[in-house]
Image (cartoon, rainbow, N blue to C red; front, side, top):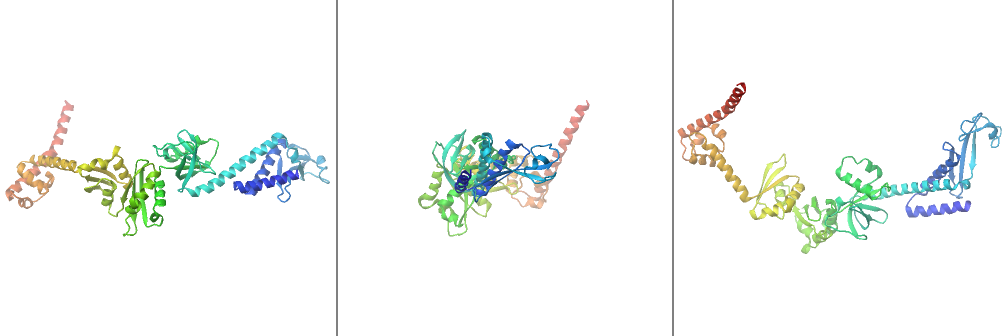
Length: 462
């Protein structure tokens, strides 16, 4: 047995080198496994301990029994008479320690010890893999396709198998067994992490992919992504040294993976053009990134402290005529573009304007100059019609008032005659008459709802 035990110790040292598992952890696992196997023979409640001597390689197991007058639990107790074979003048309350022969294990007991050992070693390996890969989240890594799990890819990274879920793939890409895959480590999840995911929709998709991969693996689950904006950013860091050096900064990234991406860039050195730096001479830098992303079009957007400039730039490659901030608090804006730029600004299936909105965090609406002019004409006609509804205001007068900025009856009713009298073709008497008519018009409008409500009540009473 001694030679076998020494061989075991040598095997454990090799396992420590190959699997990066501490020998003390493995020894503790074997001792626990021996205890579990002995309990199969001696009883579930038996008090058993095991010890492996690292110096000699010997393995010993002990059973502890309490000396009692009357035995009620043979697995834990021994009577005084039987204890005399092990102790001199034993009495109740003493403890007898019996050495167990580990060579007498039955085949079933040995198999149990083996299973427990395998499970514990796998558990230690899982913990080590988790500790190794968890800090590497956000790192770009290369592997090869091992197999398919539904539409998800299982990628061989050498030490572990990672998952490239369908939701993190570039949809137009096709893979086969052995295909090279470059992706970013998006998440590293343990079994406990999966159990506590909650309602996060992205992590829920990861959980589904992990369970489909191997229901018995129990983690860790290395989740890869080629659709993540961080992946594009890391690719730029490789191709553009100025980004790694901190001279050029990527402020934000939004992608429609495989089709189009928008990248907001800035430079801390005013002498360096961030867009030109990222493009590279003859486009060599940006082309390398695009090729890795299956030809994904990349719009580089110049960052500015002026929000209207950023919003105008965000719809590239379209050119904006001007930007109107509709609501600063609600982050809403209207971008006007030349007529021939409208399809480009919107993009196929609204792709370009959607990406611009996500990139800036603003609710953006885009219109052509002709659309804007038409709306302005319609608004002007509606305003003129409203003003002409006031007694004493004809078409010509309404046009004069509108050009002067008076676009509502309320405005006219609230001014003094001298303000209107200064307008071309309107004297003091005409101005006073117009203001008086405007006030009467508002009074009549206020009386109409009350009269309608009274008539409605009369009809119900009848």
